[in-house]
Amino acid sequence: METGSPRGAGTRADEAGEPEWTGLPPGLLRMRRLLLVVWLGLLALAVGLLLGLLAGPAWAAFALLPLALIAWGWVLLGRNWRSWRYAERADDLLISRGVLWREETVVPYGRMQLVEVTSGPVERHFGLASVQLHTAAAATDATIPGLDPAEAERLRDRLTELGEARSAGL
Image 1 (cartoon, rainbow, N blue to C red):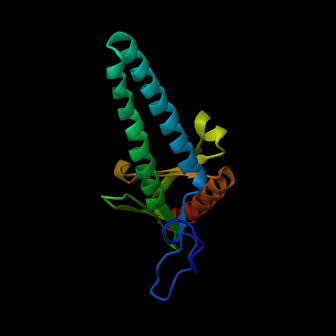
Image 2 (image 1 turned 30 degrees about the vertical axis):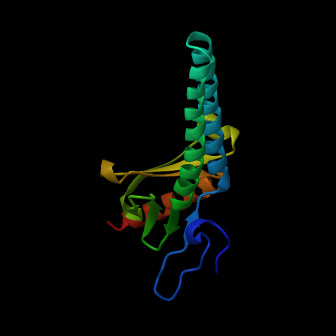
């Protein structure tokens, strides 16, 4: 049963064994879109002012280029955000992402060496945190960005517990 979350997030596993996917919260999309508008808006303002003052008013029209990038980036950020999802299975964690090039990472619980919760100043301002998974193979390190801090801590604790239980049997 769909809950309106991205790409089937919150759905129950069906008879075929499809995992229960969880999408990223909308706070991450809001944060990324706000950063896009702020940085490209400032760039448009700077380009418009500099070209208007130094080269003449006709050249200030080049300030429309960063504004067009805002519209294009707005759509791309939404597509990227909808592509991210993760699923906790019995023996491993799945992380799926990507629009053009789909990437699905499978991290076995027994191979996890370290699970970190990180949150930079911008993420903290928006009430977000990321979960970083470290394994013995550097190529399989994985990140789940933009989670609610309580969910990030719950996921860290659960993955750590499962990782300790699985690695004890190795």
